[in-house]
Length: 332
Image (tube, rainbow, N blue to C red; front, side):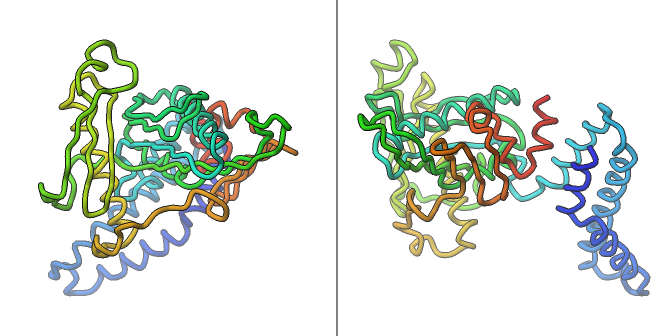
């Protein structure tokens, strides 16, 4: 438990925050401080820091005890003060795309699909398959999930990036070692976007769903494809039995994709973003999964690594997550 406290302390730099609080409180001693409307931001920051430090002191008082109350405090603190960026509290979409590597890459998407499904099950998150494009060997060119859990975006966003797999290829008659790539995209669910979309910029298409769902799904054009012309973004959804629900979900994904682009490019003009693509191949990976000639998973963002490859691929992503120790508490 002390290690978790130490890690959170290092991440937030509590002593620095205490000094900031002291400096801000010093400002309130000025005669005209309370008369200036712009100082409302300072007052709110003081209140926030006081609550954070108070909550932190309560956690410290339980640091020597493996206590249920301590675990509850840690989870609450993590959600309130670590996952406090703009979209961290949102539900999420998790999409996986095959990259370089042919059938191996498409098989790799299937492995990642199962890894995340098992993680969702272990942490008791509700999730739904939105869309998939399967191949004829059991792999996938693309797969999409909706995760209906508050804070799932804040937790899953560290999974975003190119995932590289090195293994003996099951498709190689000579049992040669192959490298394949997949891209994991994590988006917050945006229900009411900050931007406006012109009707003429969107093209709606309907088609028959190819996945499970019964007679209604397969005979009627319930699946929806949305094309956002300015960015050439294409979103599909075929998980629901009714066209209007697939349309709603597809629009939410589209909003999330556009908002993500706007945020990452710091509000550049949309015309500047058109045509930009992420290369899912060499030199762009954010996590390496080595299954042969040795076993190792190394995350290049969190700097974590583990040789428990089977555990991770069976949903144990807490082993390479930046705050895996806290995820482990949440799972238990």
